[in-house]
Amino acid sequence: MTEHEKLLAGLDYDYTDPEIQACLRQARTLAAEYNALPAGEKARREQVLDQLLGAHGEDVTVQTPFRILYGVHTRVGSHVFINAGCNFLDGGAITIGDRVLVAPDVKIYTGYHSLNARE
Image 1: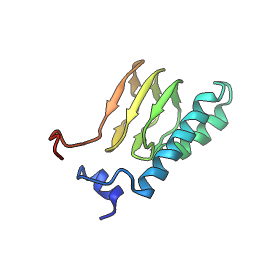
Image 2: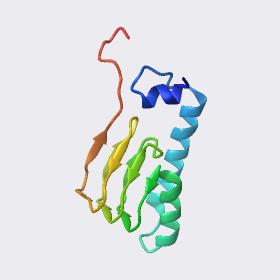
Image 3: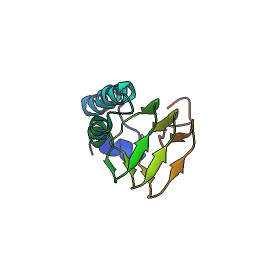
């Protein structure tokens, strides 16, 4: 298994793995670009969401600021509104169905790490 596959399976993985680090860098770059775009630039905002998220349906609105850890582990359905200040830590998969409204400042955390300090 790759370190990325281990991450998605909820197993212990090496956070310093180059593939994982590249994914994190890409998400940070794309999220920063998305957050800097004016709301009126709908076409470019959708292009960035296409690259940032694992998948998304039509008519998806994501208010800024928006934070996301990996991006590619998040799938969003159609007719979804994600309000400002949301933070998605998608170490595991996040799936948001169709016709969902996400309130402001919602935090969704799917990552796993050991609770044993020795590990």
